[in-house]
Length: 324
Image 1: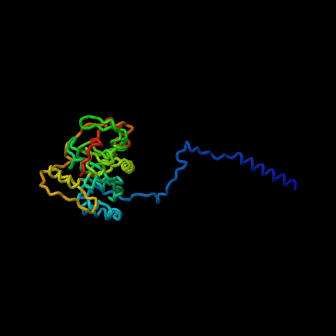
Image 2: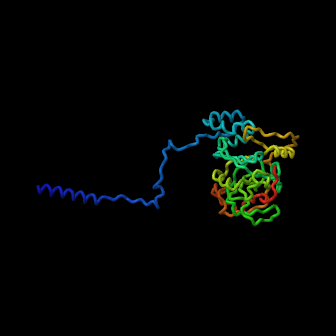
Image 3: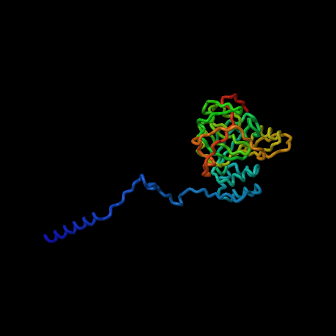
């Protein structure tokens, strides 16, 4: 009996010794391993937008409609504004259908609204706005007009500390006139225009600026979270803008953003010009500090940002507001 107890005890001691000599589990330092807590979502559960943009542009509204109806996303397109746009403004519809961006913006001067749409043309957000006090599209320096047409986002900036300088070179010491953010628009005929906040929220809903589009500070902070550099922006003329444009010989395209058609003014058209063929109107500039740039195309392209970013034309926010 004692012999068996001795053998059992010896075997147990041998097992303990072997276990102690085995390699211990390596500790993971979460400070040095970046993917310790990473989790991989199964491929079949990753949300994917399966809409395939068309190759090239559509020659007719019927072809554009056929693409939308057979895209597998007609249930989304039919609730948006793009189907109607194909009939009234096929060039704009083509640009939106071939866009790689998830959203686009419409600045509607007739309704005095800034509207954010998803890629299918369904409205997501809408804000009241103020724009230039004079009607018609912009042509030259100091004409106090908001440009109209199909544009894109050039950059997003922290404008908290920007100072306003008027057309005569006089700079106001008051900060905050551009609000906390500035969305610069890439426009062929001017380098001054953007969508920004304001220190004069009472001006929203009126024609009050030198050309920029104002929304409230709360709205601009919400909007910039959804805006991408390069995404499309349509600035749409209202009826009175259209009248001025036609009287001056400029035929600016338009779209309707609801079921209420725009009232087309009855005027005798002069020889019309394409607004995109107008000469570039470069005027006074604002020096923007590098640390105020949130996003612009130079950053997207991994290039150095410009040292002198163009100045924005706008009117001092405390000026008299001219109601439409």
